[in-house]
Length: 378
Image (cartoon, rainbow, N blue to C red; front, top):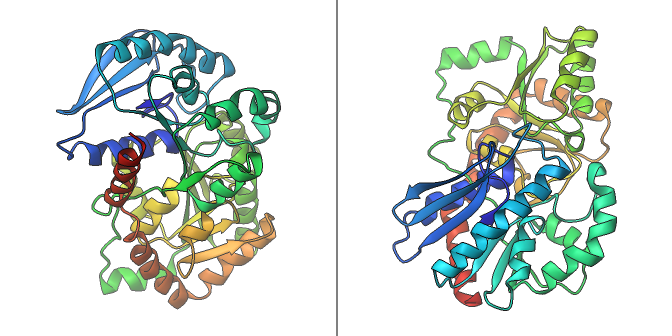
């Protein structure tokens, strides 16, 4: 398995990969080597489980949640030698790469020797990511398409991402295997009747989780929360995540004097996230582009309704457990949030539906789907 990012580096793609490995660790007839990255120079091998080893190529990373172009090229250059060494040392049945690029580039170069599966994750599929438009234009026809064309299988993590991939390459055959969620780690808070009564009196607690990038459109959420508070609808917003825009957001909150009801926590350790979800009432998102949001899945399992702008992966996740805003405007987001502030009965019904819907999307089912795909490919 290949992935240019893996926790603590990166975002949802690395987290999904680690969760999948947690299931593979329970599979006796599976032996896995993972080649990925580390934030500082060097090369280390760690034992994830008795049947899984993780080989980390060290880089000169400046930020854990943001990839500079030079860092991507550094990983490709440094990973090539250990990848070839692993292929010499063992007879593998196949390679599974997370992200078509840059990770899939290594698989493409050995396609004649070993079949490969690519999990498309979002940013590796040409589309609406403003920061990568030049790369899409330059690399799309010359690099992305040959990598996809020679893959034994392509997998998207949502129907929305699959549709975007087919717009880029209509001839491709693309499976869909969604992300999953750990239902034991992420569970609703247990509230007493006194807690429920006090909930009605306090401000609604909003949470947003994700990499702090332009794609997440955090200014829309901040504007919506400011609008609500100035309209006598008391809400608080907690922003969780690190990334390139962290300092810009901190400056915005200070300059606009919003820190009394908007808190930027930055990056939070994975161990703290279950309790953080349980300490909030509603997950909010203004993302322009997703594969399938791990944060939404974790929030659902924790019993949080969701208010989000429309993006890929939404159709699979949100039905009776949230509201989807079609127009990405602060006023529209504020209107949707306000409707739930004023209708706590609907909010509670959505909370129950969120947990119920999450129970259909487990990592065990995801692992089983991938193992069936592997058997078909090899």
